[in-house]
Length: 328
Image (cartoon, rainbow, N blue to C red; front, side, top):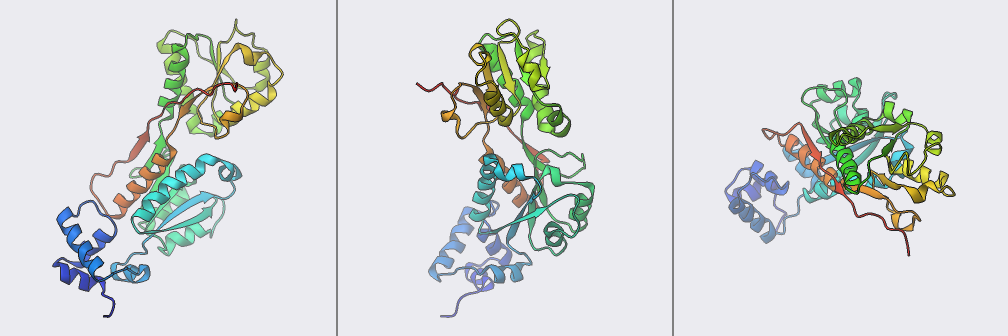
């Protein structure tokens, strides 16, 4: 028997072609009864949809794009990037969509990103908030391309959808955790460069300040590594918070022969994959980065399906991770 088309599946099920498409794409608005009926017919006739034919039939590519800044070499090396990516891919492939990765840079014209958007080679895009420049925003909106940011809406434009870690909450709970251990002199180490460049660092600083002031304690921010060397522990500092795992690793390397390690508690906002191999114990915030990727992908599909009341943002909460213990 010749292979059935989507139109023939719809006729056998007594529904329209759009309903079959929604079943294929996992649309939650389809009733369970209709879904089972359509899926039973597809199974009976061994129906396997062809992605190209589906695209032609429904004026879609059945492709989702993910764009990153190819000049940001640190992102490629960061294991957390792949956690977010895994969450995105889980949702995309569960919807029977294909996944296209591309690179861009805000200073380069004629990039793959621009061609993909202008030629509608994907049905929607996920991109880091750092890539949403005024020019890219204009390109996306002019071509009516659904998109979701991973990271905050830095431009402050209306109708921009994004998913991000609640870094203010992360700064607050990590500081509260150290205060709960009895520490009162808590120093936060953040370089001037990252403070001026990264909003998530500013958010972590805000959470730290809020928690310290709520307990009547004085926030103290150290901006240079050499300032740490002048600290007199435990008189001047009980705990040191690092704004990123890189700052913590730099500190551990720089301080490996310094008694400051033994006198203070260390804390950071990122989980470190190789933590069990580190000599010194530290406290950290646990972030569900896979969930961040999944939320971004789910939000994008809702936009692509033109659902009503899609939230402008989703904020991922954090929790205190298990303290890394010093090896026995």
